[in-house]
Length: 434
Length: 141
Ligand SMILES: Nc1ncnc2c1ncn2[C@@H]1O[C@H](COP(=O)(O)OP(=O)(O)OP(=O)(O)O)[C@@H](O)[C@H]1O
Ligand SMILES: [Mg+2]
Image 1 (tube, rainbow over the protein chains, first blue to last red):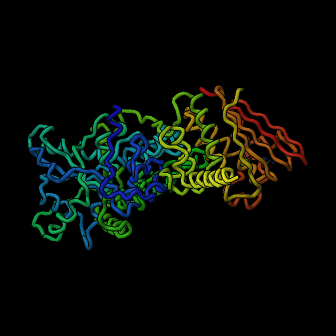
Image 2: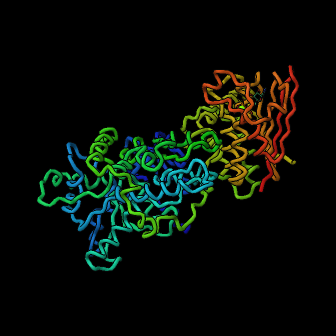
Image 3: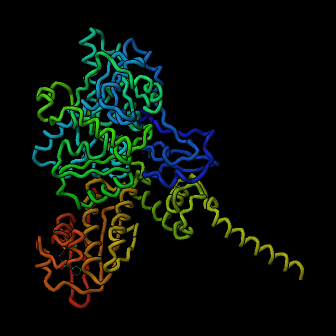
């Protein structure tokens, strides 16, 4: 389990890192340090949100995903595209060309994650009718937000809805349907998620709320965009028919989920720093008349994921238009009730708190460390300049107490120290002359 | 209670832009100390309510946090105006919040009742013209 949790899709490309401080400041869990001239990611804290990928001008932060060639590791391969993929192509009139383009580049079948989203929408809708639920219930769809809660808001874990993400539901169904149709063994089918973000890749390698992911891998949208493009405008005699509803497709954009499961009393927030602000309010019980909260780490929702090709505003608009071409039926009518029991839709594993922010396991030691940190902070300039390689003066003090650096790593302290030493030298020289 | 951590947070009257910063810092610290989630949540709610009362209703004051091995102590002290009828103020729904505060979503009259509900020990003392002191204790574990 331990090493399970340590898998990260977000990595550093050492050769490209200049050791600047841009990423330091934007990391929502203070998981980055610059030491020895380059960035380091603290594994325990990283939630794979991809903020650093977006911010790094040198493209030194990267997302590890599977190569398209990984599909050859299986006798059969099925693609399950995130609905945000539909928003990447200009002038599309229907979703079908995207599904067919995936088949053209090597997948035998395609199953829409948006259809998974339909099923999950109904499941959450039913769940919300249960009495005594914590308020608000928090969406579990964005893995970066769930991990953020594990690290920074562990007291909100009971609010996280215990229903699997659309990607997982889609993967289960895709595999089963393929096996039924083609009469093959489940292990002979590779189910690959076409992903807009590294967080989903991480969620496949170290799943949240379940023992094992139903996906075999994730392929970056960015990576296959160019290969799909030539197939997008082909007109086929028998195009693949989309099966998802308007509601399922809309999960690609912020508020899509909330408007499918609880349009009357929900709140949707996008951008990880905005999500943090609202989670603080939920923690303070300031939003307890709210029934459902949807948080997306990326601006605009999944269409804003770092692995999207198109900018999120354009993609959002495209998805909105394409959704209108789909069935307008609400998932509560469109998804048969039998689906609610046919597949395991609920978590089989609890979401555990991640104590990565804890100073020590022992309360007394933690208090001693905090006291020492407070003393150190008093003595630091408070510029939060990042030159020491820690994001703020306070985190620098935490790092000193953690034994990762020394006080003289602060250039301002060093400067003061040098001044004192220079003064002492002058004094020394003067005493000698007398 | 032997206290290891002591923090003070001055809170100014009417300073809505900084409202919530003290309680946010308190939460951050408790998480760093590894205080259990359910205790954390109680302190979060109570500290936010008490901090906002200082901003909205008091003439200014301070919030004090003490953490020891057995519990968390949260004290709010202000310099006035004091509460004339404490029993009345403790009632759910009772509020004298200004129009301004109400327009910002405060004034449901739920702050004090929520503090009392969340704290393991709750004490309030007030004198008109002098000030109000609220002391809340939260047991660890
Ligand atoms: N520090 C204080 N100084 C003076 N009066 C106070 C103070 N704290 C509370 N009060 C009085 O007690 C009343 C009730 O406080 P309480 O926190 O329960 O409700 P509220 O602040 O009015 O509304 P809410 O907390 O729901 O936004 C307040 O309206 C105010 O008259
Ligand atoms: Mg109040």
